[in-house]
Image (cartoon, rainbow, N blue to C red; front, side, top):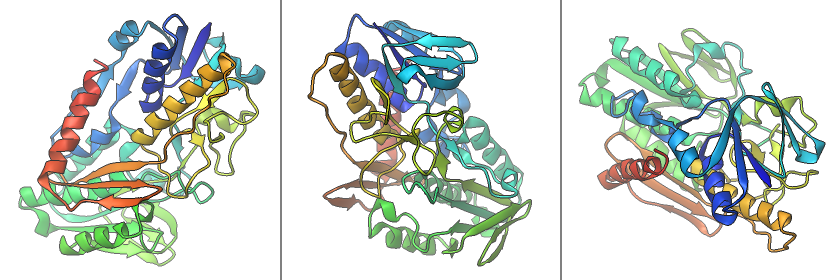
Length: 374
């Protein structure tokens, strides 16, 4: 039996461990462009020098060997034969069960978006922010995020709050804050509402306290080298950080695989891809039924991957004990020195006040998480 996993991010790594635990003798094959994992949540610390590239890049060779996993370095082109064939630029590969965890991609359609840095694109982007801040003597920094209007869950706004507050903290530590104007922009009048109904007011209150300007409730139109253009006016800026909304992986766009209106791979409550057998999706590449506040984040990817693996094994073994995954948004909005813990479930939202302990809790979690893959 050959079980196949596409990807090497949060969902894929959890899927490897889960499948190996449930089926110790199965052959597990991973297909991804390389054997490297980048811990994206800690990109926020690169501009301040709290982390560097080497600390966040993990070579997965040792982990694959421990899990007895075969890695194929390739780019996926399509999925065929009811999910049983994965077509890649290195050939076609057959499987007896498939987990798609290839991640999503950012929607880069706004005119002039090349003038903005998208932090979560990776280490190069975070280092570009670091170098630009070092070069600047002052000026305006505009920071914001957008969404996918056809897929409400396909946005990643939390990291942009962290870059905003982190840059504010960094400039204050450098005694340069008075030389900079920080502007937060978003098409929503109350950004961050998916974190909880009361969260936007608390976040905006903190921005006001830190003398961070806001430009809210106006649709984004375009970017230029020195400005953000919205339907409600322009924001002159010397540095633009912008996180677009997300859609499905590039290969899925031309595939016949079922997709949501927003372009993500369509799944049911069990993470099973619509119309395919023994084929499941987890993480940023999937569109799942659930509350409108569900998020794209590593924690949710892990929960989805565990459910997907359980259900794949159940289908293979012809059992009917399928499981859904828990909807839980869990994050710490870090400011370089403090953190704000937010946890949202279907029972409501818990938000703890900003405190130094949460900053160190986030760093400790990073240590625990990365240790298992080295």
